[in-house]
Length: 382
Image 1 (cartoon, rainbow, N blue to C red):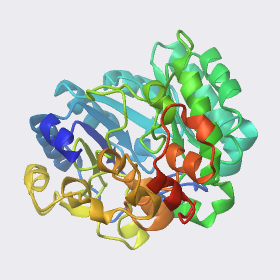
Image 2: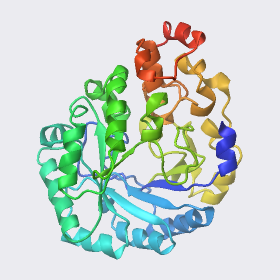
Image 3: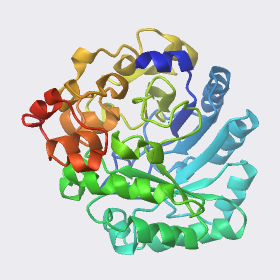
Image 4: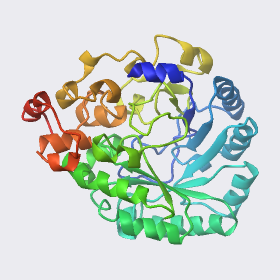
């Protein structure tokens, strides 16, 4: 099914850009070990050159991330530059230091929205972030909404909050939040040291139907956007999927290096910003640096982004190797698969896989497994 992505075309439509690794929090689930800034972070002029190339390559949306991106002194200037290039741009902040000055800069940058990380109600959020963080984020949300700046929330699902989703959505709606992205907590970075916070793979049998049900509720705000590490298959795909730039309301595999790109603050390029890099003593997902080659050369290099562009079914492991959806799915989210199994093509956090392994075929409706899948389920790592 990689042929479908080829027909859509390899272009970096969606970019997540780490402006700095400097951060004023030390979150228990931080995948990038953020804290001190890198020694060789890009200047504003360097960033503008990359922005020009992103626009020329067909990028339509950029999220300015970190670390804490507002600690990069030119975040709003780069945001305005990207906006003026016609790229929908937003910023994702932890909200710890968000003030009126930040609201004014966000407006000047013509950002589509301001995103804040909020991981459930106060106790759950502060447990993984910092005491007092929840109230600061809520204050930042209210400040933006009061001045007409749209707000999006990103939440990572963990053992502390995964049963709070319906009531938390109401809380966000009451505060005027427009968009809510939900993603599973992945044991990468600091969270690999706090696996007690990571939900069990079998928990997706409850979490995914819950998210699908919430997303299907018409007229209820905020609108829910499941991240790419949530799914896959079974009867919930139509409710979970459906997004800008995709021709089908079904999971068609990880798009890292196909329609998604990640840029680190020193210019390193990956298919997805979440993938491990030198911060994790891994370099197999690094495709080059804009300090050595142009972004255009890196993107168009046929030897790069091989984790998806040169996919072969022989790479699949575990249950994924026999799954009926193996050609289209390719192991689901590369970040989730690798962080859990060290095999980019073996992902235990899959609804279909867990339903088959746990013999919950009642959850699959008409989507029943083959004899080969049932046999493999007895041997598969859950």
